[in-house]
Length: 112
Length: 114
Image (cartoon, rainbow over all chains, first blue to last red):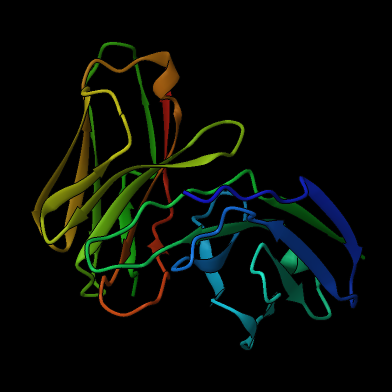
């Protein structure tokens, strides 16, 4: 199973773009990269998923280089409400279920 | 209209007791999970059920027993509770078809063992 490494914490100000990088050197060929967001006292919430290059949705963008050994979650123009823990996961979705390993995550603090 | 619900939200009990946590999802998913989040905020998978069959057991003590009466429910029963069982337990579900990794999590059950 691919292990992920993320910064423990990051600070930002409202209106800035935030980039959180995740390292996954042992990513397997069939693994996808997924990011979750967790607010205090809530369950994690899916943000975005990708396999290679770039994926964008209404919430974030995910950049994956050609070697796929890392990925970067980009949050455009963050607000105070984006203060949360962000988890990077790698794994293979399949019909029989899959093993999910959440690392320690990155605590993002957005300041006014 | 809650997608994944858990009861109770808070559970305080003494060591040695037996307790259950219930989970229900109304998303039509065929796979459900239990996670444990400890005080350091590490989120670890405990069990996974796909169509009422256990498919993952991450070396959880056998005091923990998941029960899935149907695809929409996955309950967690814990025997002989210990102090180290204090944590937040999350239920989650997903559809096993397709390539989406997206899981839907419940609000969590905070278990405190005294």
